[in-house]
Image (cartoon, rainbow, N blue to C red; front, side, top):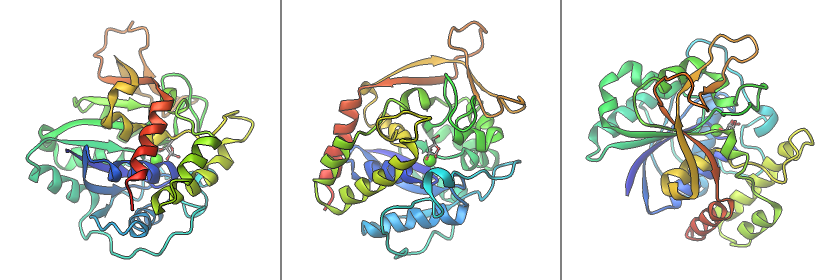
Length: 309
Ligand code: BDR
Ligand code: CA
């Protein structure tokens, strides 16, 4: 199984992404690290621990940055609620967070792994940037980064910027310039990864703890996204796309382009500027994901959830 680290800010879609990763035999979740984003750092780590405790899975979960590299934290309480994971009833954590920090934990896992490790960041990129700043030589042991963030066409938190990149553009800039292979699952694809009411009911009908949790997360996650401004038919499973891409890239359509991060624009800070027509001649540093087979994506989630107890 492919060794991966999930760096997340749970978050409804982060939690579902975690479940997909933990339930799959093709990837081995070597570590989970958390970052401030959807909610404060203390809330996102607590949410990760609560989800794992609910599933009776004990794993190393290490807390990372509580604020972006240089900016003040923006949270997404409007989407994920006060706790960052409103909706389902979850137990208090049954085990403690790691004594290591996120970057210590990542460094140790990556250095000790025989195979190169794939990073799956589904929150702001603060921890990954800090990892590269503190341990620059670690890059040699990383296979690739498959992240949720950014967009080629338009944002969700501002007209130009997607939330994860907007929260910490300086961190995103460090990651996008890292020289490592990067796959960007941005809004172009994630807005097509919607889950409809029928899908939620099919998932709920599996009847195990994992499927019940996912269905309840989706019930809450729908509220914000059914808002007429979006006009969605169901909530988009942003972060789940990044894990699904690692599991089966063949259900996605992607193309390499140059992508730069806007850190100064008055109207466009946090935008991932994609050279879609390749007219700058700059290095094609990012594999940009544009589309997916939605049915196969939902089936992947459904089939994986069936295998939980
Ligand atoms: C991203 O922002 C968060 O609210 C979600 O968890 C996802 O990672 C979508 O813009
Ligand atoms: Ca997230």
